[in-house]
Length: 148
Image (cartoon, rainbow, N blue to C red):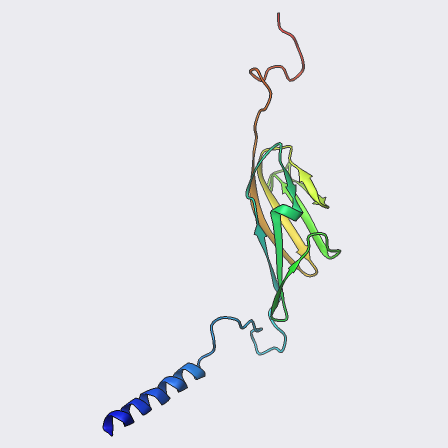
């Protein structure tokens, strides 16, 4: 009888402990007791390394995810509310910002930043573009001189 009573007490304590804790996964709530959910956006890049002859294609190279009112959904890159910018040479005096539609052909090697805005949210990530020389010779014929 004592053994049965001990199991019953331990089972009740375990049930109280498990049901009394907030579940760690699947609940997105606003801090401060607000009624709405937490709203945020994050980007999932499919590529981080490009060559100068490549191009950034938003349809294939980027996934945009947004959490609004506790639900996570994917936003298409060609949505009216989405603005995608490519920042070449970020932080330098030669920095250029280009708003793209579907794709962006790279011409300069170096670090580039992909910046995305959706409604009042924004996120960004960095990519690397490597320069490659695809022509023959030693590279001295870029002006088409013929040396005798």
